[in-house]
Image 1 (cartoon, helix red, strand yellow):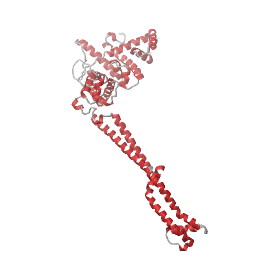
Image 2: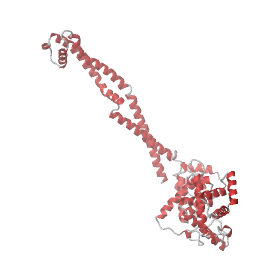
Image 3: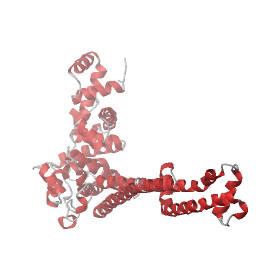
Image 4: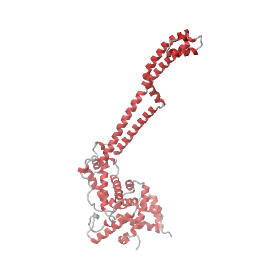
Length: 242
Length: 198
């Protein structure tokens, strides 16, 4: 004959006494109780234990635990910073910090030169020089025409200067007979580049760069504000609690 | 008592409304604290601390059982108080239910006139308290909630924050330990409650 019951059986007896078993489970345990004296004995001792514990009497409170209205009125939930719960302020501070960090990260990547953004920043830098390049190209064109003529006259008759030198080099490389139009090419080339780059620069500098910068600044400012409100709420809440 | 209205008013900063809630729950809170800690002064301190903490946390109460929410805070205050007291010398548990009315001695809310009856009752209460104190903290809280205060499994799970299944199995182990402990006090127990044949 066994002398103890298992933990599982004891748990079932507890559930039986606490009335948390289903009708079917009650039937099963009652059948087992009828056949098992040890289980019956354990049930009785458990019942007595619970009854004894329920004999615990309430002890009178030694004093009232009410709060002093004068002392606690200020920390009640009606101030500006109690308008939202602490968890809201914590969320705002976190979200704001995240936005600020994201904006900062994007700005850093921009500064470091991400492929797309580098084009934009390069364009922005180049833009002020576009007019200058155009001017140079125009002067090249002007210089190129006489140079061609000069080269046709011969290298010794050339005037000094960079453009003239360049035309001279080109003339040396070019075949002697059809030199005219081809000689003008090197001089004309910068013009074409300058015009093209001016157009590209103009488009890139004005279209994508400005809205992105504005958006970044706006997001950064908004994130910073939200973070500040969140932190302020937490700090004031903590002060009130203290 | 319109509890919901009082809670709403307290959340708006009405200390008097909160005090009405305190008066309603202070006996329960103090008795739970007393049985968790086992010392009247410390239980009073923990109860007071719990009510203050609950007041400051009112904005985080989002409905449900206010009693469970409050008791969870008081229970945590008890754990804090016990940790504080562990670092300092504390008075004996025997001081809780003795017949003299010195400071730190608990008085029953309802007590008869017969001195002998009072003495026996106090000894029994002390025996129960001693057995509760021998339990690990997590079992003690469950035993107090379930068998001293009569909370349901769901309420206990709500207060302690542990799963319902864990409450059931832990309560079963707790009662087994309490039964064994109370055996040692069987001469103090009323004959109908003696756990084994003498």
